[in-house]
Image 1 (cartoon, helix red, strand yellow):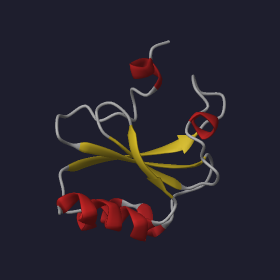
Image 2 (spheres, helix red, strand yellow):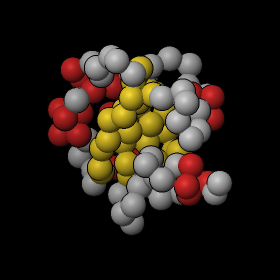
Image 3 (spheres, one colour):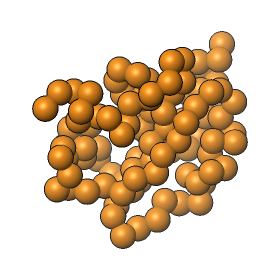
Amino acid sequence: MTYEEKYKGLLSHLEDTLNIAVMYEEGETPPSQMDEQLMEKVEQETVMTWRPYQKDYVVDYKEELNVEKFPVILVFNREELVFKTNKVEELYEFFKNRAK
């Protein structure tokens, strides 16, 4: 399986646009600060997805991406993971620093 196949749902499909993926435990719901309001506060071109963690998926993202706890916010460009955090404030800081 190619890298692109493994990360197809997480990599951004748009040039110069990042994909924010909120991954959470299956059966749970992401905290309210990680819902659509999250995107509204990020002032850059992004797309966003929410997906439950599924251990038996094609790839175990928890292991593959060294996720220590859920929910986790993952930011991907077209090629790779560029940022990972469990804290919304850190995500805002990441985008604030990118804008400089």
